[in-house]
Image 1: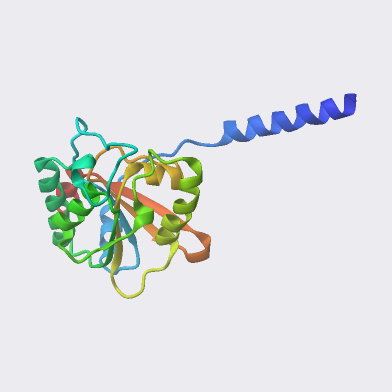
Image 2 (image 1 turned 90 degrees about the vertical axis):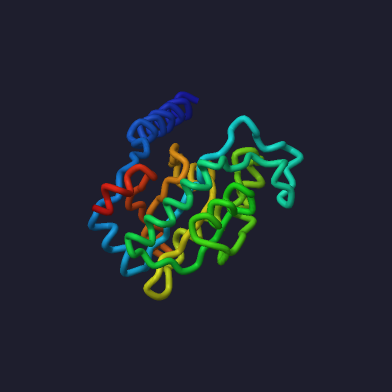
Amino acid sequence: MKLFVALIIALLTLTQAAFAAEKPFVETTVTHDTLMQLRHGGYVLYMRHGTSDTSRPDRVPNVDLNDCSTQRPLTAEGVELAAKVGRAIRRAKIPVGEIFASPMCRAKDTARAAFGDDFIVLGHLRYTSNMASYEKAGMTPMSRALLSKPVEGKVNRVLVAHAPNLMDIMGYFPKIEGTVVVFKPLGNEGFKYLGSITPAQWPKLLQ
C-alpha cells in the first residue's frame, strides 16, 4: 500500500512539473523577411474576421447560418478594416490561392471585403466558442489539417475564421480583429507558427 501511495505521489509530482515547465503561447510580429518569403508562396494565412458589433451577439442556440440577423455582424468599420487588410496583402505582393471562410456571416463578409467573391465556405471553420466539446472534436482536426497541408504552386492558402478556433488548435487567441496569422505547413509534422500581423502593423511592414 505504501509503495502504491509513493508511486501516485511521484506521478503527481511529475505531472505538476510538466505543467510548470509548459510555457504560455507568445505572440510575435511577422518580420519583413517573412513577408518576402510569402511572395514565393507555400504558406497559410489565417485571418480573424474584421471588427464586429459585440452589442449584437450570436443568438445561441438559434443561430441560422442563412440568416445574418441571428449572428454577431461586422460593423461598417469592420468591413473597411477587412478591405484595408486585403489591399495591404496585395500591396505586399503576396500571392493568394485558395480562400476558405467560416460559414458565419462576419467571416464571409470579411472574406468578400478583403478578397472578393471567389472563396469557399467550409462548415468546420464555424465559430467554436459556443460549441460543446464533442462538437469541437469533430471540427478542430479538419481545421488543423488546413494549416498543415502543403500548399501547391507559388501561392498562399487563406483561411478567414475566428479567434476561438485557433485557441482550440494551438492555445493562441489573436485578440485584435483583422489580425493575420502566418503558418508554414509541414504536412504530417503539423505546422509552424511564424508570426502575426495586426491591421495597424501593415504600414510599417510595407515601408
